[in-house]
Image 1 (tube, one colour):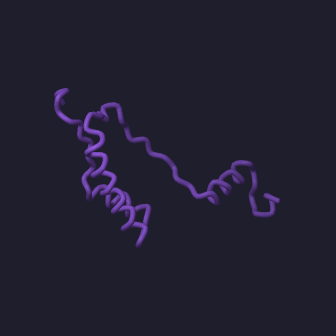
Image 2 (cartoon, one colour):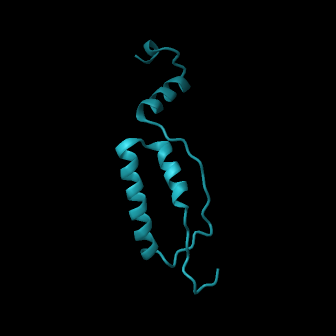
Image 3 (cartoon, helix red, strand yellow):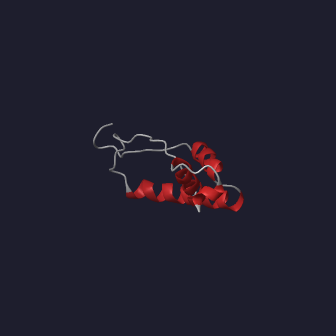
Length: 85
């Protein structure tokens, strides 16, 4: 990309919608879709000179607090709920 052209880093809207649909349902999904569109519109005007050349996707595990606590208990050797008391 020539130095004079603005940097563009776009995800197709249908890809964004599919990813959001994996995490959210109902009203939360629609609110997050709207937030993604508004954020993309704002960033397009605000970050024209930023290049994502070194960016990479790193998958990560997303857990609720209860899930994290349960995994910690299992990792610590608990085999039943009574073991955690």
